[in-house]
Length: 409
Ligand code: 9WN
Image (tube, rainbow, N blue to C red; front, top):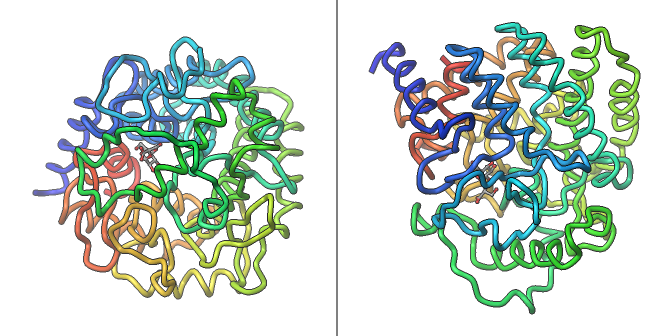
């Protein structure tokens, strides 16, 4: 296939995964609207359909809670092919949604989309909603000044070893029986384990039982970890929101202050042992045992640290394709198990935004080349083995198609 053929195939994936105003990540495995997937889908749409790009974000924000939270899944239509579905979450919202959030990349992508295709009035309508969501993060997910996640799904990097310290302390005694659906769609060896799922469902149960009281979840829930990736993303998203405020003639003081305050809190995430920003349990203070692709998002927030960059460069050199989600030198590295080692085109694209901001053009070109090679060889899969390029997970994946169009090609 030529790159032109791949462009057409990518556009076809976005169009085929369109369910009317929102895009599913991939048919079968993920039949609903996911939060950060949609923001990337919008970026992809902006390369050939500006109106549809803005609609994707608008549909996502139509499910925003009155608290400002933008949920991680919106269950627009019923589909029993995914677990846990709306009845398990039981949030009581219309439309039905999950009860947690996902990395706040929407402002970052909204700015890039506006740069590419304009649409100032669409952006103006989104602005207060973005601001409310970022405020929700501060009110409900900050501890030690850092953006924390109350569920691994909230990080979007589900079974990454980053969460192992927090996961170890989740008591699954009351989890009950349930039927997974994901392993009916893709190879179980490429998915999180049963022990992981028992913990994921225990956390959902806690949320449901406290009526999705987000402060209660933060303060007394079974799991809370400081996430370098979400922290860097939120800092960047607040800076981008400040830039958006300037474009719109709004006051940028609030998002600017939020970004500055979180940046000042970063030392809490610094691991002297690993010489990097590392996930840390907000309850026990225990650090994760390895560096991950989360640290590679530092440049997105304008955080430059020579010691950490050296570590990240070594991590990248240990594989052939893209930034691995977990350090190949770590005992926890599994090159095909989801977030425990594979490289994710969508994360590479986000890291590249940071590399560009930092003026690291040669590294950005290398990352783009390696990501494009994976897609040319293997197609629009969900993620890839970074050592040999084997395509893994779901096929015809929306965000892989989107980043091909918006960045990698
Ligand atoms: C849970 C949709 C989502 C992504 C996440 C990815 C995966 C879900 C799952 O799929 O998570 O949210 O069931 O595994 O980890 O990043 O948003 O593509």
